[in-house]
Image (tube, rainbow, N blue to C red):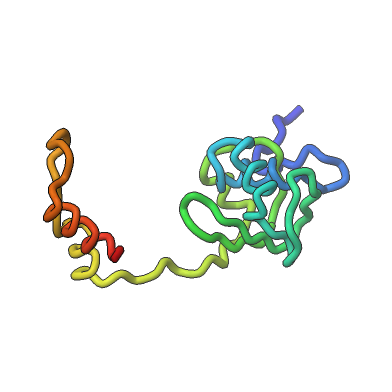
Amino acid sequence: MAPADRSDHSSAPSAEVRLDKWLWAARCFKTRGAATEACDGGHCTVDGRPGKPGQRVRVGQRIEVQTPGGQRVLVVVALADKRGSATEARALFEDHSPPPPVVDPVERLMRSQPVFARTRGAGRPTKRDRRLLDRERGTP
């Protein structure tokens, strides 16, 4: 008897998998609990409707999810309820995510270097230090 092919992760006979399990297997989240929290928090939609953790996902559905890495738009190609390797996870969906925003290199440099920096443990800021901090933060 030949060993089972690992590319077919679907163990559900009805060809449906829980949304939180699929997001975890597709490596959108590091843990299944994080995927469940994202669904409960309203960060996930399935075909334009809010997704619940126990909702069943089928092939062809469009999932939009806000992950720690940014907004992802995925179309389900295959089902899995167990987490596999990264290459197996990439075979579960087609990625239609928007490209990350282009940040001007000069702007990135300006963000990374603070105008005013205080050393840790320097004590209470003076009135001048407070004004510089407020100006940097953009508060009046």
